[in-house]
Amino acid sequence: MAKVNLVDKKVQMSRSEIIKFQLMSHCYFQKLAMSESDYNCLTLLGGMGESDLTEFCTLAASHNIFKTTQTVRNCLVRMERQGLISKEGKSKKRIALSPDLKIQTLGNVLLNYKVFHIES
Image (cartoon, rainbow, N blue to C red):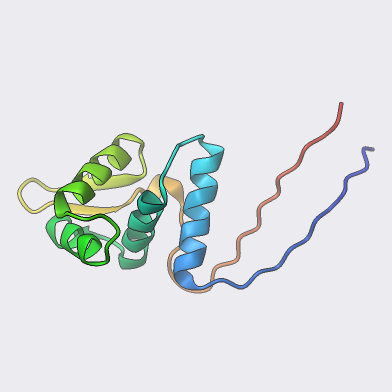
C-alpha cells in the first residue's frame, strides 16, 4: 500500500465564493483558459440562476464585469461554445449555467474533492 501525505483543509466561503471555486475547479480540470472577468460573469449567472439574456448582459455591465453589454454577449457566446452555459429560446433567450457542470448554487454546499498524485 502506498503512503500518502494527506492535506485536510476546511474553509467557509460565501455563496458567490463557493460558486466561483466550483467554476474555477471545473475549468482547471478541463484545461479551459478563463479570465477573472469570465469567472465573475459565470459566478453572477450562477448566483442568479436562469436569466433573460438581455437583462443579464445589462446587469453584468452595470457590475463592471465587462464595460459594455456587447462584451458580455461575446463572452457568453464563447462560454456556450465551451459548454459552460446553455441558451434556450428564439426571440427572448434565457441563459443559465449548463446543468452538465453540476455546480451547486443553492442551499448548504459541501465540496468533497479527492485529488491525488501517486509516485511510480
